[in-house]
Length: 359
Image 1 (cartoon, rainbow, N blue to C red):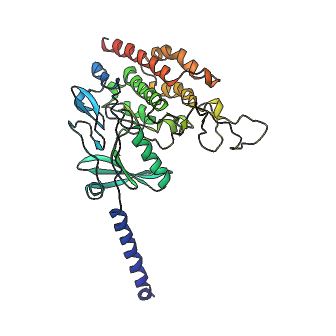
Image 2 (image 1 turned 120 degrees about the vertical axis):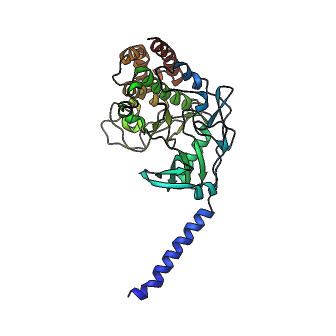
């Protein structure tokens, strides 16, 4: 019996091997376009080194390099990593296939498998998409939103493989555990935490006024899920990691959105996201659409978590009480815009950072 089956087994093995070779040879690099807009608030952290993880212009975030002591984006089709003084071409298929070593599986989601990997001694994340349309949509969104210091930057793209920098501190949901570690506990203060909150609000404001229109963070049905979309960098900042679910709102064309096709519950989601017809079962076809103000509703809950119970966190929340009350208005039209929220957060940041620096 084994002898009779042996040709079939050999054929299966050879076929699989040939398919693997075909996939590798057919890989195509998708270059990520960059914008020349320089976010004005990024280098400002250099003024507050006493209370924060040390910052220097030479250690710009991925995708940015130091130029005249200002972090500027790399040219189109290039990337950089923290500590680099110049940009390099995005990794090609040949670079990825023969220069990247996969170390182990990390997690799998609804669109891709994620692996830890190494490229020339640099820790990277190896994303393999298995839902082509959804995966390519995510890549397209990343391409359109880059570069921005608070959004993850690609290192290379090859067909269904996307390579990005690895952030070992994990996602924002683990911020309390990270700041409790021996090497970070001295940074567990209101200023460090508020800076993360400012990063979060900065990202929301950018998405609501992005190069591709008003975009909504839809993958945010609860606090934990929302926080998992943001990664903690080595200098204790936040970067947006997941851009797969960012539908567009266009008020001029009266184009609104719905986040998914299932019924949503809980205080974390905005009132307009809940099924409004209590006398009948949920029906997605009858569910009214909504706009970007659902992101504003979530701001107070996310920020309160990020601030935690550190010294001075109460004073920070007191300064934000008025704007947070407006954020939680039942009538979405009466909530402030993300730009208005960011403006008050930046003012509060300047006050807190200045006071802390001279304590």
